[in-house]
Image (cartoon, rainbow, N blue to C red; front, side, top):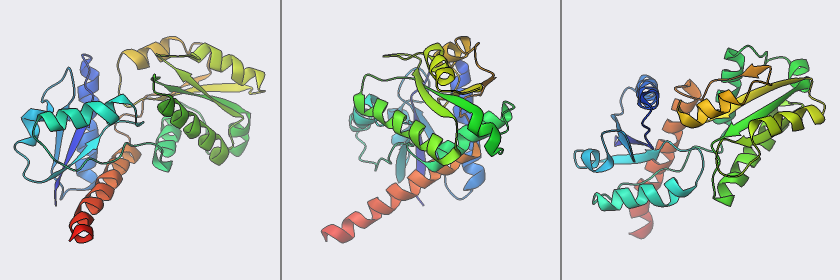
Length: 242
């Protein structure tokens, strides 16, 4: 089996690397037979060139929610610069597993997500990092729409911690205007850091504030799902071109 090379962005905040390490342990627990390695684009070590050279066979799996600049440009460029031609898996979103992980974090924060009545009167802010890429913003809005449709929330509004608005307070106001009697903020982010802290600081008007996705079992399962998809695609290429 090829190794799973998890490529994370990296952060100066030590909580980021600790969360990635915990997620890697969850991946290993779910698939003990697969070697899992980690490389970072920035701030943390090891970097991509330090890792790819020692992997005889691997699939690169980006720890990214949307196909924005890091997925389209930074990771392919870093792999090329390292002389690597590893197959690269798709980004994590969208996926029902991400919705399940969001549900998990809201439940851990005290919201009874199993109750249809509670969901029907609760409005949720899906608080994302934000991106200048219009496609990434559209993808996040599609996740919000699907989450509302499949769970029966009173409403789901997207907020951004950076780039263009709306911000969390604006989204909370929109939820109340839509008739939500209870509000929750669900960070659509992978690890602690500056942007999650910014979201938390602006969520004082919400009844519930969930944690970041972090090492959720659903996130580990999704990484393995993307790994399996890319591995199958890579193995099919010789047969198609022979």
